Amino acid sequence: MLVRGFRYKMKPDADQEVLFRQFAGVCRLVYNLALEQRRDWYRQYERETGARLNYTAQCRELTALRSAYDWIGAVSQTCQQQALRDLDRAFGHFFAGRARYPSTRKKGVNDAFRFQGREVATERLNGKWSAVRLPKIGWVKFRDTRPMRGTVKNATVVLDALGWHISFTCEIAHNAPINICPSVGADRGVVNTLVLSTGERLSVPPSLEAIERRHRAAQRVLARRKRGSTRHRRQLQRCARLAARRARIRRDWQHKAALHIAQRFGAVVVEDLKIRNMTASARGTIEEPGRGVRQKAGLNRSILNQGWFGFETLLAYKLEERGGILVTVDPAYTSQTCSACGTVDRQSRESQAVFACTECGFRAHADHNAAINILRRNTASMRMEDGHQLSDEVRTGSGLLPAENPRGSLRGRC
Image (cartoon, rainbow, N blue to C red; front, side, top):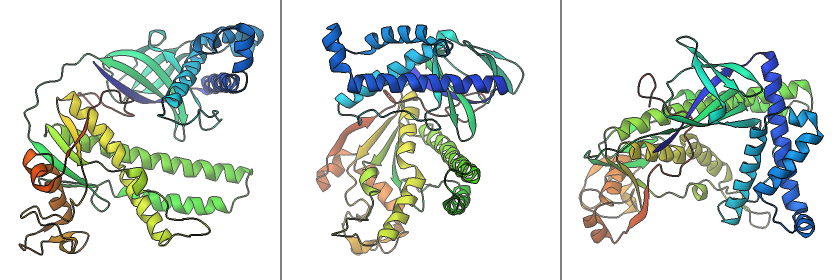
């Protein structure tokens, strides 16, 4: 059984958009009130009632709150219960050590609400448009850019910088086939986003760099605007739209590249990179200021612009769907090791793009040489030769959140 997400751009009319904002605001209020109750009043609640303050108890509190305030009762109860479920899940992640303590939701950042799948219905209007029926809102049009598959489990309406969108989470019956395709190693970089052991080089679209320049210029204009003014608000929205467009272009490329690799290879071997540590700031402290801070900041931006972790996540679930696996290995010295003779020498890396072995004279593109070493490191012979252990982490798509924009196999990209 696969869990996939299908995201579409909505086109609500003026009255429906007012309802959307009302639903999002009430759900945000319920979440924040429940968070405050758990944070500040749970001892008093347990002392007075003798019961624990959990999701079930807060659902009973929600019923009383809806009876007391008509404007809260006007919003679907399911959406408010889903907000309580989100809070309960957030506390579960916190106590398990997987996340930080839950924080309050804010207007303009957390504008979303969710329905259960059995409450919504969809119908096709024409070749480009469909409509979804939402409880207490009615039929709302959305741009049908890809066919949905499976059974709808829930539908989330969210507002971002580019407008209102709806995401359907669907369960799809699927039996993974036996994958007999060959293995491949992949080296991630900054100049070339991905270089395969076959010699292929894949890079994010150059339009990202153009949008990045426009975004920086817009941020400089924003810095000169007076906070709280209308011009500041409009410029802030412009910056948000550019950032959202850049993220969408990057995600589109990631889906296409991951699908291209998953269709051709049965196992993909990548380095087990600690991206958060790699992109840490070099500012240091007042007592011990860092060195090369601006250069390190530029490198951090370049790494984050490639979207390494997002690509790895998409590749994992696409491989699993086709019976493949994603394997991570130790990244130590992959770029300094000669793939021909096995000599490890930092002097062999002449430049960012050139690898010339000081021992045997082998020359190749540096990233291609590293990709071959990454692939060989996943084999028993390589581990015995170099003393490297295969990582225990074999990633698949199981347990991952639904992808942002997965496509069907008929008219979409993946």
